[in-house]
Amino acid sequence: VLPADVSIDLLKTQIKDLAANGATKFLVSGFPRFVDQAKLFEAKAAPVSRVLCLDCSVDTSVDRAKACGKLDLDGVARRHDSLADNWDGIAEYYAAENKFTRVDADQPLKKVANAVRQHACEPVQGHTVK
Image 1 (cartoon, one colour):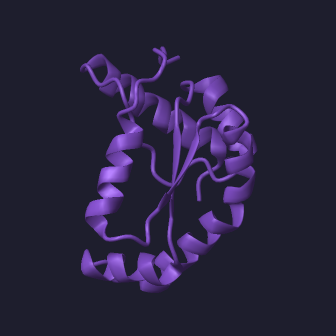
Image 2 (cartoon, one colour):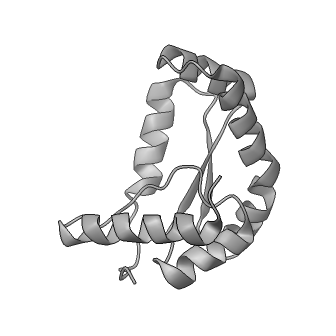
């Protein structure tokens, strides 16, 4: 795992490059894991308009990874558990700003995709990448 500063600098570069090519929304998977990372990201890279938590069981994560051909299923389970262990702080932080949505990801994939699309495409205030 990279230090937060390094991860954020890499994300900032990617977001700036994408924004320069017309992108206006960005999905960052698995980040932040901690509130201090969230605050640092917003201070250094870009404001966050919405956080989606795809909440599912470890079995669902492993089954979906297996279906996609992932080989390190133990690693998938560890990543799931690590994210799940830390989501309460992230949820509380962004819920206070009305930016947090939990999606039941144990549903069939089509329903999960529709829920993500619905929440990710809701109108948000304009933001400028720093």
